[in-house]
Length: 226
Image 1 (tube, one colour):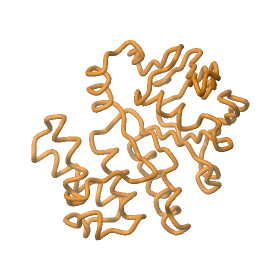
Image 2: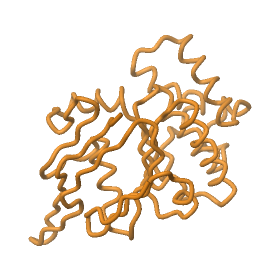
Image 3: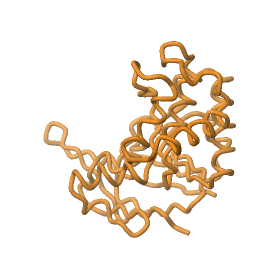
Image 4: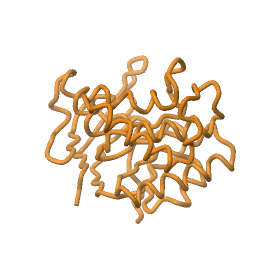
């Protein structure tokens, strides 16, 4: 079942009066449960496309439809609420709140959603069991390795059971062991919860594990292989 669809999606930046097509007439569909990597050379539009899918940026033209909601028609408050309830994000820089514990970082999204304390705590324990960090619940980010911080970021993205996860170069700052551990966890979560993962990456280790590869060049889809 298709959960995300783009229709003739374009993002044009004006750099010194020269239009740059970061995303150029992209029409794609993503199905529930996918483990997909968007790949291509630096500057090809990977991150821009991911930001458009997640409503972090607005297209110059075209549409992004998630389930039955055309998010390009939502106002700023509506898109914030939609992201909160439907989309999980994992970034290259982890983006954990340094003054909060690992547990509090993961709970934060659920608090914003108004989920009760009992349900939050049960979900956090379940996720930390899955990511192998049950003994790090009360550690702040500064006391965690890069790989551990990224695992917490994945748990945070999954906490509210979003429709899909957008991961922008999530392994870029990790060593090989941490990368393999993280990808193992993501694949297990993908299979256990049927959560859709869409990566922007140039990491061969992610590419090898992806079940679908979408290649961009100059903002255009030049290949889509399953």
